[in-house]
Image 1 (cartoon, rainbow, N blue to C red):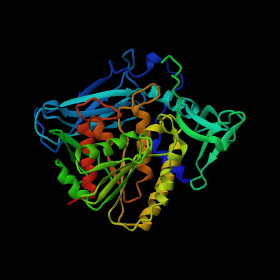
Image 2: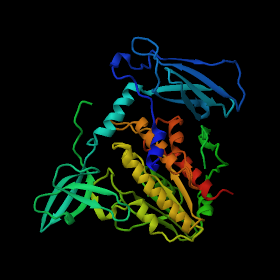
Image 3: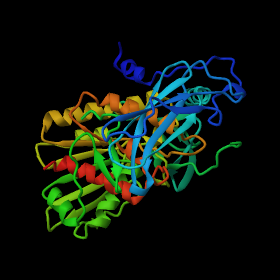
Image 4: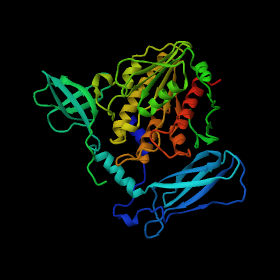
Length: 436
């Protein structure tokens, strides 16, 4: 079996019957939930199960699966929360299972994010209509400038193809009349509005208690003071490659540690690179954006780098080298094979780096929940997050489970989470860099 096909099998999802109308789709108002084997008192460490029976808008029970539920168990007064795992029985019934990590009164929250019928539309739209987000390319030649459409797939016959010789990846722009393809110098998201209407992680991988994330993967630490952070990072070189959700980690560290000072490299902030150094303790932290597709303000094309190429340019051999990766949110608009190709290229580059430098620490920040837009969806993000985990499953890397950390907090879900959530993510990263 081709390797990519093996990974795509992780995304298999049950399909609803073809002839289904809206009223026959799953309805959260008529769907029923009930405790299985209810008791008055439960013990810490036990698991609670909830039976879910999906019903349509008529109140009729569903006879097939494929609905996408999210669930959490939380204690608002304790600022504690943990995600629940959902098992699809493929007959319209589901089971939500929750670990009980802390004592006290708990509430269970179950949300029908998408019906199976809606997911069928999402899948079809993702694979057949890549024209959901648009990008602009800026060409400069003989004192003239032209702005044209660019994207992950060619549009029209006369296009410029930008082929990266090392990775084999391609990017396409409509060729402006009278301009050579070499005149393409800048990239941005097209600001036009959309057409209207409209090591292995267990499950759960951790939980919040008193606003602190308690990992069930390992003994994570609380880096509550700047001196805790500097003691951990002393002598380290930390390279972050990803999108703006990973840039939040860099921004948090620069804000939290007074001795960590940003150096002005005279580059655009959005793509970076953003560099901060601590001369007193001898370490640096750098962030830069991954390569297109990338939704951002107008920026020079030469400032955008492929993660795989950047990794191949790192010599290795330094036991203080830390690599942090994040690459997901900007890919949800496209067919999954686009993302899978990028992940496999990055994975292979990580494997080569680890072969050169086995002491290197590689940390992957998973996808965040809360991508809410016309074309964005937690289900689409979840699919890519699942693919990412499968792709890297054979390598000695650490996955910071941002998916669960953003989904069970008492703050509302947001693609760019609140500072307290980012702090917990950074603390978990530091716990893997400095386990003792």
